[in-house]
Amino acid sequence: MTICIEAFLCPQKDEKISTSIAEGVALILKEKLDDRKEMKKNVQRLYGLRSVVAHGKRKTVMESDVFEMQQIVMSFISKMICFSDKMQTLNDLIQWIEDKKLK
Image 1 (cartoon, rainbow, N blue to C red):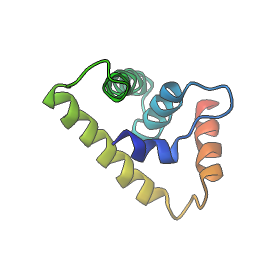
Image 2 (image 1 turned 90 degrees about the vertical axis):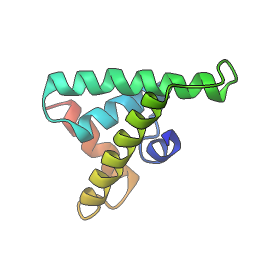
Image 3 (image 1 turned 120 degrees about the vertical axis):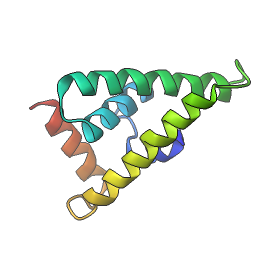
Image 4 (image 1 turned 135 degrees about the horizontal axis):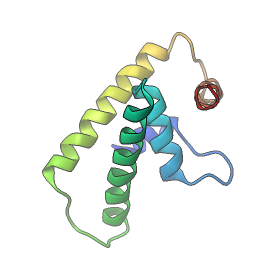
């Protein structure tokens, strides 16, 4: 599931991948600052779980965490479909996220 998001939100030079993904998802899915902060924190936690499993430090994750990530990924994909008429390239998406950060 995280690879799906990684395909859209690859980090810029010198940017940590978990931060890039968490911030991008939060900016895309949430409007209010507090909601964005909470989403960023959640995505970083879930991405961290993915990392420990992928690197063999842990064998399992809770089913509730998998369900939560599925919900985030489905919402993210849905939003990307809605954005498809406005953004034609990954650079367009990266620029949109950068603009949102600076608002």
